[in-house]
Amino acid sequence: MCAMSVDPTRLKILVYPAPALRKKGKEVDWADGTVQAVARRMIELMHEADGVGLAAPQVGLPWRLFVTNGREADPEDRVFINPDLTLGRGEMVAEEEGCLSLPGINVQVRRAPQADIAAIDLNGEAFRMSGNGLLTRIWQHENDHLDGVLIIDKMSPMDRLATRKALKGLKMAAGAAATGPHAL
Image 1 (cartoon, helix red, strand yellow):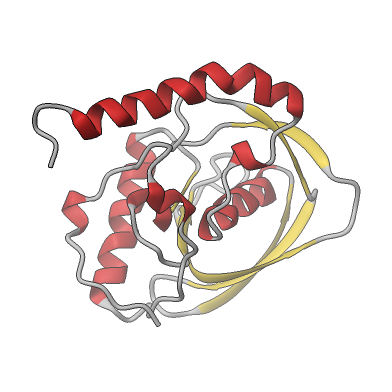
Image 2 (cartoon, rainbow, N blue to C red; image 1 turned 135 degrees about the vertical axis):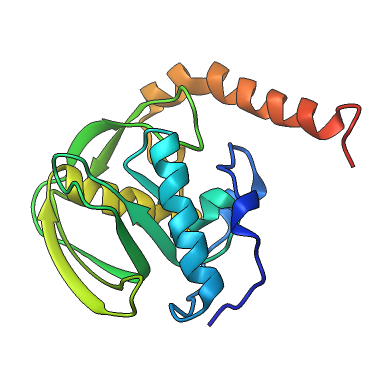
């Protein structure tokens, strides 16, 4: 289990190409007060950014933890600690996805139409859910983050060409921020 001292109030959503987005998450202990505080802060950040999900690597933490609020598909704020995702059978479905860590970039991503997930909630209760459509798309997207996988890794060659300029802009902005007058 991963234990780390973190100040949840300092967390922010990282933007590509932040190296933390590529780190694989490690299991965490739900009973750790820091993990609970981080999950609550992640829910706040997700809502502030008008997102439907947010994974721990997106706030710089290599943890197996994500939060969701699927709006019409599942309007509850949910915390998934150490999730285990099982994809259902069926033809993969391509739909447009965006990502809070890739602002302004939307690409077609093929995903399983159904999935089951088992995880631990904020109270330490193990739970299972089955879903389809948007709900499972959110789970798959956030679970990819836990493995260091981004939507740009799953895009078509046509989307790769269409997003090349935007991705270059994100990289240049990150480089400028890292070399700015107040950079360490």
